[in-house]
Length: 135
Image (tube, one colour):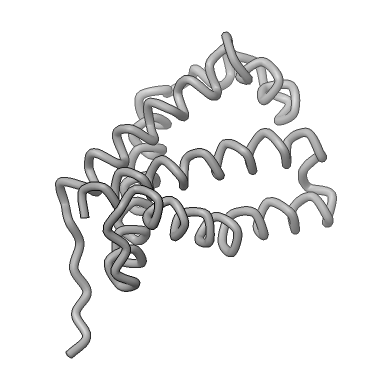
Protein backbone atom coordinates (compact mmCIF):
# COMPACT_ATOMS: atom_id res chain seq x y z
CA UNK A 1 0.00 0.00 0.00
CA UNK A 2 1.23 3.47 -0.89
CA UNK A 3 1.55 5.82 2.06
CA UNK A 4 2.61 9.45 2.19
CA UNK A 5 4.30 10.42 5.41
CA UNK A 6 6.67 13.11 6.55
CA UNK A 7 9.12 13.41 9.40
CA UNK A 8 7.89 16.67 10.94
CA UNK A 9 10.95 17.17 13.12
CA UNK A 10 13.27 16.71 10.13
CA UNK A 11 11.16 19.06 8.02
CA UNK A 12 11.33 21.77 10.68
CA UNK A 13 15.09 21.40 11.23
CA UNK A 14 15.76 21.37 7.48
CA UNK A 15 13.58 24.44 6.92
CA UNK A 16 15.32 26.29 9.75
CA UNK A 17 18.78 25.43 8.39
CA UNK A 18 17.79 26.48 4.86
CA UNK A 19 16.33 29.74 6.17
CA UNK A 20 19.55 30.58 8.04
CA UNK A 21 21.49 29.90 4.84
CA UNK A 22 19.14 32.14 2.83
CA UNK A 23 19.49 34.97 5.32
CA UNK A 24 23.26 34.78 4.93
CA UNK A 25 23.16 34.45 1.11
CA UNK A 26 20.95 37.51 0.63
CA UNK A 27 22.61 39.57 3.38
CA UNK A 28 24.32 42.87 2.61
CA UNK A 29 27.66 41.21 3.41
CA UNK A 30 27.31 38.51 0.80
CA UNK A 31 25.04 38.79 -2.26
CA UNK A 32 22.21 41.01 -1.06
CA UNK A 33 23.51 44.16 -2.74
CA UNK A 34 23.87 42.39 -6.11
CA UNK A 35 20.42 40.83 -5.75
CA UNK A 36 18.79 44.19 -4.93
CA UNK A 37 20.38 45.71 -8.03
CA UNK A 38 19.07 42.86 -10.21
CA UNK A 39 15.50 43.16 -8.92
CA UNK A 40 15.60 46.96 -9.07
CA UNK A 41 14.75 47.52 -5.41
CA UNK A 42 16.34 49.48 -2.62
CA UNK A 43 17.13 48.07 0.79
CA UNK A 44 14.46 50.36 2.27
CA UNK A 45 11.80 48.98 -0.11
CA UNK A 46 12.64 45.39 0.80
CA UNK A 47 12.60 46.14 4.54
CA UNK A 48 8.96 47.33 4.45
CA UNK A 49 6.78 44.75 6.21
CA UNK A 50 9.85 42.55 6.62
CA UNK A 51 8.26 40.39 9.33
CA UNK A 52 5.47 39.44 6.90
CA UNK A 53 7.96 38.72 4.11
CA UNK A 54 10.13 36.58 6.39
CA UNK A 55 7.11 34.62 7.60
CA UNK A 56 6.06 34.00 3.99
CA UNK A 57 9.60 32.97 3.06
CA UNK A 58 9.80 30.53 5.97
CA UNK A 59 6.39 29.09 5.12
CA UNK A 60 7.56 28.53 1.55
CA UNK A 61 10.73 26.80 2.69
CA UNK A 62 8.67 24.71 5.11
CA UNK A 63 6.42 23.56 2.25
CA UNK A 64 9.45 22.82 0.06
CA UNK A 65 11.04 20.88 2.90
CA UNK A 66 7.87 18.84 3.45
CA UNK A 67 7.51 17.97 -0.24
CA UNK A 68 11.19 17.10 -0.52
CA UNK A 69 10.82 14.87 2.54
CA UNK A 70 8.03 13.00 0.75
CA UNK A 71 10.32 12.52 -2.26
CA UNK A 72 13.24 11.39 -0.10
CA UNK A 73 11.13 8.92 1.85
CA UNK A 74 9.47 7.66 -1.35
CA UNK A 75 12.80 6.67 -2.89
CA UNK A 76 14.15 5.26 0.38
CA UNK A 77 17.01 7.74 0.73
CA UNK A 78 18.33 7.60 4.29
CA UNK A 79 21.81 9.11 4.22
CA UNK A 80 23.12 12.63 3.81
CA UNK A 81 24.50 11.86 0.34
CA UNK A 82 21.28 10.20 -0.83
CA UNK A 83 19.20 13.08 0.50
CA UNK A 84 21.44 15.57 -1.27
CA UNK A 85 21.11 13.60 -4.51
CA UNK A 86 17.31 13.75 -4.30
CA UNK A 87 17.63 17.47 -3.51
CA UNK A 88 19.85 17.95 -6.56
CA UNK A 89 17.38 16.17 -8.84
CA UNK A 90 14.44 18.15 -7.43
CA UNK A 91 16.35 21.42 -7.84
CA UNK A 92 17.27 20.56 -11.41
CA UNK A 93 13.77 19.58 -12.42
CA UNK A 94 11.69 22.11 -10.52
CA UNK A 95 13.76 25.19 -9.69
CA UNK A 96 16.54 25.50 -12.26
CA UNK A 97 14.09 24.97 -15.10
CA UNK A 98 11.79 27.70 -13.74
CA UNK A 99 14.63 30.18 -13.36
CA UNK A 100 15.91 29.34 -16.83
CA UNK A 101 12.57 29.94 -18.55
CA UNK A 102 12.24 33.31 -16.79
CA UNK A 103 15.64 34.23 -18.20
CA UNK A 104 14.79 32.99 -21.70
CA UNK A 105 11.60 35.06 -21.76
CA UNK A 106 13.46 38.12 -20.50
CA UNK A 107 11.82 38.53 -17.12
CA UNK A 108 15.13 37.80 -15.39
CA UNK A 109 18.71 38.76 -16.22
CA UNK A 110 21.54 36.26 -16.49
CA UNK A 111 23.00 37.57 -13.22
CA UNK A 112 19.64 37.25 -11.47
CA UNK A 113 19.38 33.71 -12.87
CA UNK A 114 22.76 32.84 -11.39
CA UNK A 115 22.08 34.46 -8.00
CA UNK A 116 18.75 32.68 -7.54
CA UNK A 117 19.68 29.37 -9.17
CA UNK A 118 22.80 28.83 -7.10
CA UNK A 119 20.96 29.92 -3.97
CA UNK A 120 18.27 27.34 -4.67
CA UNK A 121 20.85 24.64 -5.47
CA UNK A 122 22.57 25.10 -2.11
CA UNK A 123 19.22 25.37 -0.34
CA UNK A 124 17.99 22.09 -1.87
CA UNK A 125 21.28 20.39 -0.96
CA UNK A 126 20.93 21.59 2.65
CA UNK A 127 17.33 20.42 2.80
CA UNK A 128 18.25 17.07 1.27
CA UNK A 129 21.21 16.59 3.60
CA UNK A 130 19.18 17.26 6.73
CA UNK A 131 16.19 15.22 5.59
CA UNK A 132 18.38 12.32 4.47
CA UNK A 133 20.29 12.37 7.75
CA UNK A 134 17.19 12.59 9.94
CA UNK A 135 15.07 10.27 7.77
